[in-house]
Image (cartoon, rainbow, N blue to C red):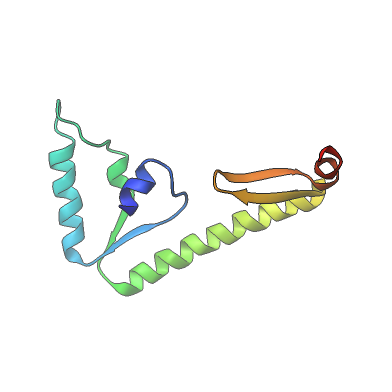
Length: 107
């Protein structure tokens, strides 16, 4: 389910991490079966979504790496927002950015 949400871009910048030696084989098997010429059920890009690691420590390292990138991106957005006196509202359809004063005058 999570893999599918990442495929169709309903989840963004979220790592899908498979922990244990069997997952790499499963992803390879899926690639061999799902990418057969004439019977494509997925794209090669879809099979690059999951990270296959052997240990919990490797999974934790990936989560920390993604969290650091997320924090950096969020800080960069906050800096841009502060520079333009804007605000950000998260809606079900994603972020909406605008100028608070202009928004208040329109409503």
